[in-house]
Amino acid sequence: MSELTIDVVSDVVCPWCFIGKRRLEAALRELKRERPEVAPRIRWLPFFLNPDTPEEGEPYRPFLEKKFGGPEQLAQIWAQIAEAGRSADIAFAFERIEKRANTLKAHRLIHRAQTRGDADALVERLFAAQFLEGRDVGDAAELVRLAADCGEDEAAALAYLRTEEDADAVRAGFDRAQRMGVTGVPFYILAGRYGVGGAQPPELMLGALRQALAPV
Image (cartoon, rainbow, N blue to C red):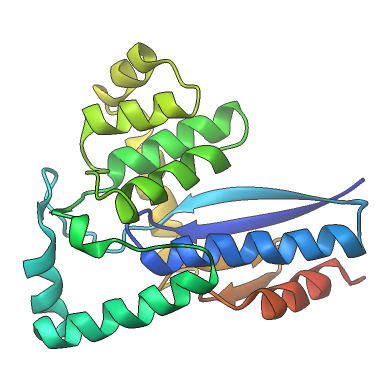
């Protein structure tokens, strides 16, 4: 088998990152048909879409209306994202989201999962909780329940979140992304060499994966 490392810089409160995840998965399914000997290894790297979010979070819609210029502009943006989401089998439910979440704890859980193996199931669960169910992905108790959905031990996850373990590592990961010039997410680093920005359609992402696999 030939390993292909795919670093994904993202945040769990970024709707385009959710779309990008599904589009990457579609591209990888096609790649598997073409190149069954390739073993993708996805690593999730932290990004803070809104780094100034209070630790306890704050009301979601008022923040976005202020950020994007009012309710009409926000409605247009949500409609655009919802249309893109349908093509990726995502039924966004923005109206369910009440809290603008601080995602440090969520990124710490992802970091912890990756030190133990694959974090994909947890990342998917966090995206679904945020955008389909409107759950607060900044709340420790909620995060523990979501981690348990993915097979984590609730008591161990809660004990972990009650500390500051890995918080500095997550912040350092965000700083590295910024130093690399990443200003928006999702952002993909393929084979440590090729950067791809945005939630690209599956066919474009497949082309980038092929390029990353080409001999140097």
